[in-house]
Amino acid sequence: MLHLDHVSKSFRNKRVINDLSLSIGTGVHGLLAPNGAGKTTLIQMIATLIRLDSGNITWNGQDIMVMDEDYRGLLGYLPQKFGYYPDYSAEDFLMYIAALQGIGRKRAKPLAKDLLKTVGLKDQGKQKMKTLSGGMIQRVGLAQAMINDPELMILDEPTAGLDPRERVRFRNLVHALSRDRIVILSTHIVSDLETIADRVIMLKDGQICCNQSPRQISRWLEGKIFLVPADYRLGQGQLLLEDELDGDATRLRIYSPEPPSQGQAVPANLEDAFLVIYGDEE
Ligand SMILES: Nc1ncnc2c1ncn2[C@@H]1O[C@H](COP(=O)(O)OP(=O)(O)OP(=O)(O)O)[C@@H](O)[C@H]1O
Ligand SMILES: [Mg+2]
Image 1 (tube, rainbow, N blue to C red):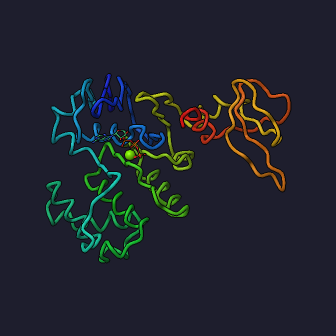
Image 2: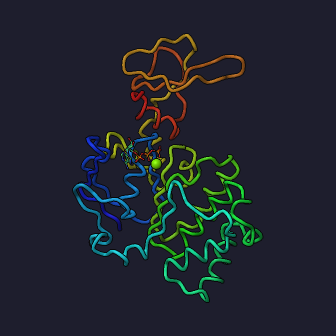
Image 3: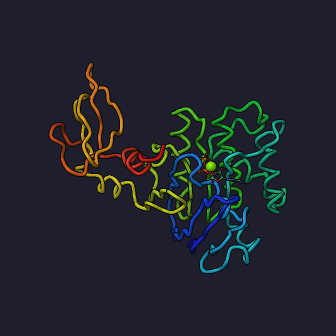
């Protein structure tokens, strides 16, 4: 169990994480927030890469800074910008990461092969990294985060830049690898989380403004999302979510706490929640 207790972090005078407390158990936790909201900052603190200004982070009750190597031994991490040597093959790269983790060559070799198989790159292991597609490279990134069979795996925007098919593939992989571990996956793409996240954690003003399952979130918005005619004028408390094409006609998708004078209620999705929560930010 990972526990964040009153964690704060500022850069210069800007408070990015503000007195944030959070407990995380097994399962996939989606960290969903717009660009610049502080996802990477939070993740880098959990990965012990940057210091907290105040508060503390514990793993099963022990301070992660005090645990030091013991903690890093149970952590798998895929950074937002992950560095690799373009001339290394995928297998060489995994061997290199294994060596950094103190895993001997004899054990590392079959492990690297196994992991490449798991991420669907059995036949590409000998290929230089620079010849792989973006989706394949992200899968190598996932494999390196798995090398120590981590109890806690953190993936910072792993699907950025992937096409929809690779995105689905990556999502399914993460889901398959998430059993019996904690996975924290940051993204600003709602569809990354809709089907695999046990919980969706949203950040706003450096704090957690939502920590619920996708289903709970939809329930929270039930009866509050409507399609109304294109000429509908928004009333107080109502929010335009998006223009929707409906055959030849355009309709507006709106959030409205009370039923509007015209239009029909529709099921809510996670994207609606994102737009409602962050709708007032420019
Ligand atoms: N090392 C740093 N020095 C100064 N400011 C920083 C530093 N790292 C982050 N910031 C600022 O902190 C804020 C949060 O950045 P962070 O990278 O955590 O956001 P994010 O949610 O990961 O965004 P993105 O979706 O773009 O990756 C931003 O305003 C950023 O400019
Ligand atoms: Mg980031």
